[in-house]
Length: 373
Image (cartoon, rainbow, N blue to C red; front, side, top):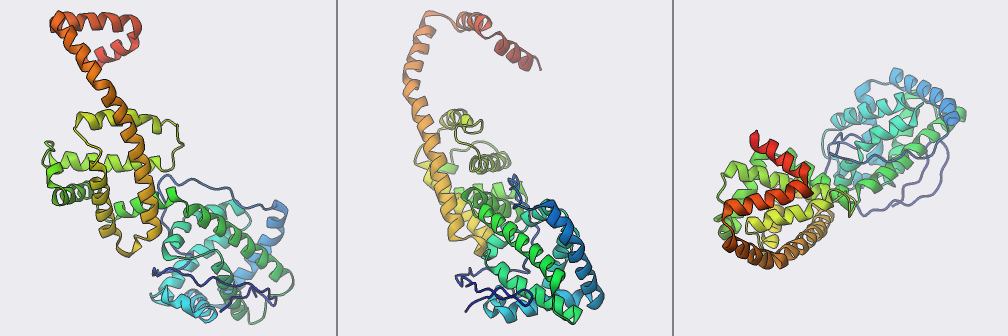
């Protein structure tokens, strides 16, 4: 089938891609999830002259729509028109049409109110892109929704959009379509999928509880690893969450940036706690098991692929640093033993302190303050 861009009386051929996902949703143009750390994108090009010329016309038409139809009927009409325009979409939106329509109308009404300031419309659409990624919507579907909206407007007005009304609304919908396409492309990047999946997992339960579930799953799948953990379960649970938060943050951090420079210190902690290279596969499996259970059918192949590639990348960087630490550990231990045979611990300690006081006085001072506290 095809979805032709009609809007008013105009028709331009455009084929709609039928390769839709199987996710179901409670409403299009209606999600409000905001991804933590989401990087804002620039709005599509526009001229303030166009906005000032078209916005009053758009708002005037919309006011007539709100006068001509009951609020709930507008939302219901949108989904009725949408499913008539493209019947396969009905399988993706299975909730009551009035409920879905009310959610859609809340957001769209806000967009119309801001149509004289396109950047504000763009910011509102940022909250929708992750939702649309999850349900499998594509930029092309804005054509179908546009046809549904224009039909609803014509029904409310009891006449077709023509002249400057049609020009203004086509300007609005074309700009919204560009903005949505830009948002979907950004939301579909690997780091956004990683962040989105983790945010949704955190939404399923409190952080301390989620950390406990991860530890319990590790105990079940790899009891030999869990058995060496001596800290209280609650403390370990918190550490797990902190670890994963760092891994997720690395997905959008610049390679070689400040966050990636923390890898050597993290590697040192792993060595101190006896972490081995082969543990990575087990912990990765545990984390995936927990997230799949939490997200159910929202865990997609795209998310799994993004997580897998990022996990391998972080582990490779971590283990390279661990290997470097371990290559220096034997000579360092040998030197320390030789020094310990020559000097007693107090003498050795004072000698090290004297050297550090000359070369790194600020470091010695900070340690002294921390020790006194």
